[in-house]
Length: 122
Image 1 (cartoon, rainbow, N blue to C red):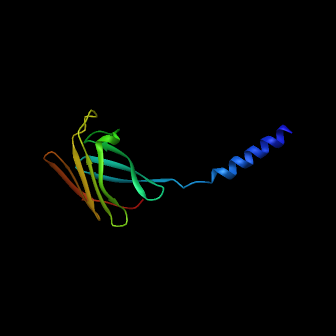
Image 2: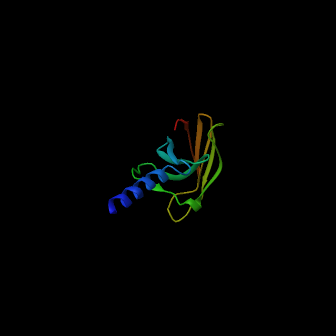
Image 3: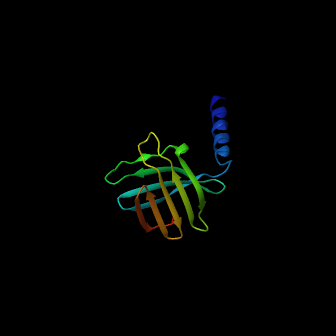
């Protein structure tokens, strides 16, 4: 009796595991001028920036930026447009903007500017 109840529970659990929207993650990144920005992209109904890891020149570990300090002005994978702003905060990372239009990316912080190509492959 206990075995059949356990088997029924396992079968029910497995059948429900596939119910609900699929969640996929992928990543995009910018790397130039010693700066590196890694974007984790989640995709349930449409792609969205899930997290941002920032590496300053010489920083191998980087820091995940606080969500309340990051503003995504535009993110359209089909049109290949991304405009992301970071406001300076307790994390010690200066304010910056990352703008991507097609394969052209520009990172700006203070008086520093780095331009690079951007690969939209996810």
